[in-house]
Length: 283
Image 1 (cartoon, rainbow, N blue to C red):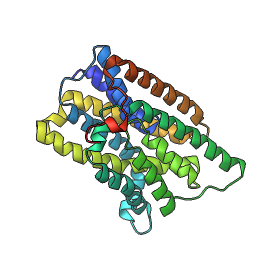
Image 2: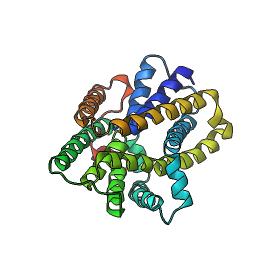
Image 3: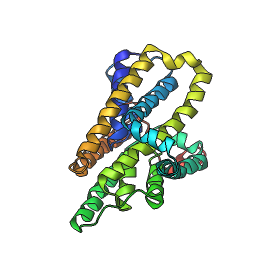
Image 4: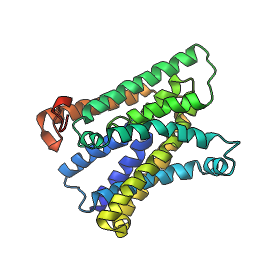
């Protein structure tokens, strides 16, 4: 696997996991575009994906290490661990219900549409958070209703191209949280989701290529870049979350979505064509 390819993909993973632009969607797009430029992987792609996930997991662990220590040492006083478990349930249930159907979506045909859904979510974040500030509403705290609402939106983000952080941020602001509290809990929510993906995909990767497939030089480069840029993305978002215009993020994601749809319609760059649900295998 090309080292430069690994570094660039790690950078994309780290930034797009915590910026509201969709990591799964950007990884698919980046892989296609880098392939056109002659940069592509040549190893175990599953092992590489596993280590990218590990990189972003390390970023969350490093940034919130004090929170993790406190919630693990004081699970009764600190309810965050329970709330994270509750928030993880909707995505887990939906993943079990959809099963192999998710694999069909991850082939990419739904990608352009998903980017447009993300753009709509980002516009709604700006609208709902703006209404709360205008009306002088005092921000709420993360409780079971907020965790469950954000969990439902995290389940929607199982679709490739729908941003997990953008979706959960929307769930937070519509359930009375301010942007900072919603973002903080959203980023912590990512840890169980990433860990679950890491464990499931890691088992398959080890079965296919052995444990050594996870620790090649190129996969470790990707993991390192994902960790560093993920940490920086979390820091950026939490510092500027109240001043960021989500309209700008929405415009960017919509532009990417339109580009992907054009590429799908023309068949250029190897993007899977758009398909109606009725034409999917097994539908």
